[in-house]
Length: 171
Image (tube, rainbow, N blue to C red):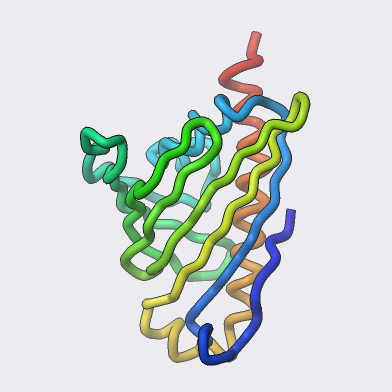
């Protein structure tokens, strides 16, 4: 499913800022989806080539937050982004929020809502590019980066459904 993207170039949002809202719908339960999405170390296995490398940095603290992973990911364009994902808020099984730092800085929020046999998923991704050459070319490449994001997220929805099937419905 395509993400809605804010193309605005204004005082609040400049050319390095990206605001995406992605909507997915998969068959399963919030518990199943949450269990898969909360573990970024598994993304490289089920999300596919978009996640090149994921390194576990630290576990959650006693309050259930603070866990971090270093991520290298790539869409179809010829560049990678290296960033750290840190869990900053949990609401199992209805969602969680991560902080991104590195070549992406910002925040991502997953929202999960049961709808019969399906889960409606909304991902809010508000980030700023810090990779220098992408910043310099942002005015030119921003539309391509948005298409690249949509490509990655479309694969994510497809592969998440396959992962739910593999984990919970395999015979």
